[in-house]
Image (cartoon, rainbow over all chains, first blue to last red; front, side):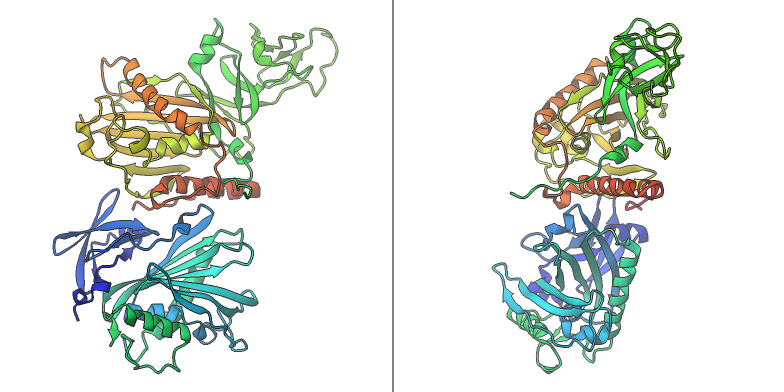
Length: 273
Length: 351
């Protein structure tokens, strides 16, 4: 299908990458929703166009964002990203061969942690997940609050909250027991190249601790994402089934909530309907 | 209300940097021979500045005897600073060389005042309070480097009841122009600034801005509208190299803020331009106008910067600056190698 037929997807902002990466690679072209995007690197900004049509661009959360349609407002906000005591970085921008909706579905699914990321994000001795609550806020964003999971790294139960304000992206709030009310953030922002290919832009914005080594953090996060990428590219269906092609036993309650939210928002691009 | 969290818990890292304390002009105006002494304060430390044997010196402004200020004394023909109270004489090393009341007694070991590294550059006297790591340089200034400049103006320093950090941020803040300087430096229509690449190179925070050319139509002729290229030596220096839109010539605004205390600063400015017959008063007066717009606002801010302040995407310059200050402060507490790494590890976004 043409993305233009899916107004919800069409009229959104999408990241095209970190401006630093774009400059370093001297990137002049990328793709979005089946369309070629031309990039022009200026000294103080990066512009984008599609078939010579200038597109709106803005820089937020360490990425250049654009839209092929008419978004009503700025890209999603995470003002905490700009707090001065945070370490922020783009973990990577990597192409993955499936629908970008699949990665959101993957990230929010804590049930896969013990199996895909054993001894890092979970282990098989702790499968007793406490399901969190799903809710939709006034702005229409889906929240999956207080999902609990065993975290072998810290030998304790970790608490996660997910915010999905766009079909193709999710922000993970990692609760911090030492500073209640403040979170460490991971953002997964998909740039859908077409219905079955996307670039995963992964953001990290953690409160800086003395032990943190920037390179090590990046490497650790990349290896977790590489495990996800491996599985994502091996699904039978490249698009995300919203039609019952995967039985509900195979997916956890968070995924069900997300898929339900996509259906309610009439998202079809990148989905099996 | 919860207590605020300061950006940097420990300010002592600032002692490892060179800071300006006075212009040569000021010292020369202080006494007929041009040797001083004059009193200045740096990071809460009172200093006496003088020229002894043709070399500038900076020492703690306190006679070891009864703690009178040496800066109120005088520089003798024998190139010593004489205390105004009992006439103790100090040499360039800070050691007392004569106690007139007991001229033949042995001079006690404790009869000295600490002397600090002191250099003259750009017509300005610079002091570094802690030279134990000896790894910092006097901030970069382009004024005498670029042969296109025909005139370098060393402005009279001015004091603000604001911290050096706030002064630096004010000078480099893109989103205040439209509010504090409408019609002077900026057109209010351009209130949304670009989010530009910011580099760390050799201890300098570097970035580039291109304000809208359309503003040429509305701004006064003295307004230095052009492409703005910043090379800012940490922690408090700004070298704003401008290529003027109106005639494509370079114009330099250089400023360095000196932290007298956490809540006050003394500011040095150099203007360089390419004009043959431009009276100094003209660019100076324009800058005074700009400063008069800034000062009453900036002085309402608390001196220290707090983590509790809300930052926006468009505050990128100040956010990057704050992060670097924080890293430098933390690193200095760990030691020399960590401090050098924090200051001299380059990070490039622009290419």
